[in-house]
Image (cartoon, rainbow, N blue to C red; front, side):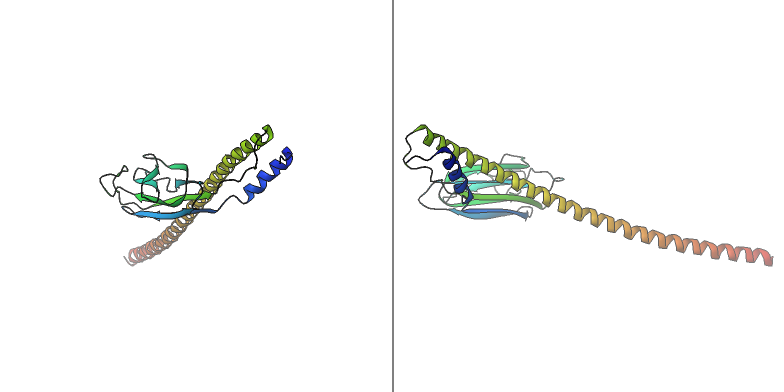
Length: 221
């Protein structure tokens, strides 16, 4: 049975409202020479979309040692980040167990990232599993083909919105890190200023005592 185009668009919106089976946006500090791995499981028997992204939050550090790889259940790489990339996105179709690994510095002869440099790095990352949309049953006419096309476009749009939301979270994390650094710097400057004031007072007091003693000796002479 065909639905009016307005009802079809509303159905797309309804389906997208329950589109995410597994999702998450996180950040982790990866020690130099170490690797952190995270598992995600897509529903078995159906081809789901597994997509996500990463962003190195330490803007002042070189991204060369960071490598991000997505493995399937057989530990075969299905996606890996570009060399020296500050950020990246991925999107694949599959089912079963996947593992997202983030490494800071090369750990073997087959690694493509730079050697470890002794600097820990914080990396923000997100991974989502989106089950396939049911679509409209009994596709036959142009309205049904248009509906399928709209569903496909809506999935791409939602994926882009998810990526943008993640990067906004990364920006907020950067702002928090910079605010903490600014507060730490301000406190140190305040402490040094207070210490300098104490030193200046002591020096001034010593000079007053020295001049007083000097003039007293001149008067006795």
